[in-house]
Length: 307
Image (cartoon, rainbow, N blue to C red):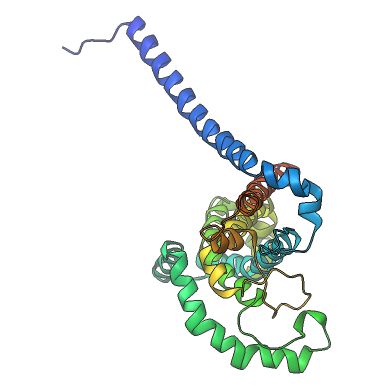
């Protein structure tokens, strides 16, 4: 005979479970707040000496003279991330549509698995592939072509270094592609089959059905996938550090070397000797932390508006 638990025992177990979850959630928030406070406290010397707005708006980064301005690395972070998003987002949506709406089930299963495996490749492997394969190919074949044909545009001017903003954008696009495409597939799979069949029954072609019944109904989910990919691109470190050229400058050309907030911390933190240098790098980390936070918050607001 099965013994039924008493109501008091059930309530006690529920309370324990409820408070355990609250404590775990509170620990996550505490860890997040503690990271922000640590970065802010470590950057206090740079804020006191340089001034927060002067640090953000200045373009000079010279550790020899202890002069630090974060505008070039902020510029490099946003331009490389937005460039990667411009490349990866349409490719990811196209891949998700092909695998969900067009490809046979067996092919979709294999191709989907291979694309998701890209997310498991370590960042340093992407960087090594970028140095030995992507950068020489860009320097010899791609960049000279753009310079010759479209060199009148500022974004395609200058010598073909191979390393630079364009290389970093391509590497980042490969790294965020599996994230965006996987989420886009989940969004498309959540749309009821009857919605597709209704569009076809009304005489729509397959493309019209995809445009009306699938894409139009997926705006909020696709935007969330795009913002998640952007968050991954903003914080990427090793692969970008290895191919971006690591020169703190603001240049309109995508072929010129640049630097991001994550790469400057990775490059200089181990070699920083002065307190002000360490504090400046901590302030760069705090800015990256804040940018990620603001990006996620804006994504939540915009997704609500789209819905």
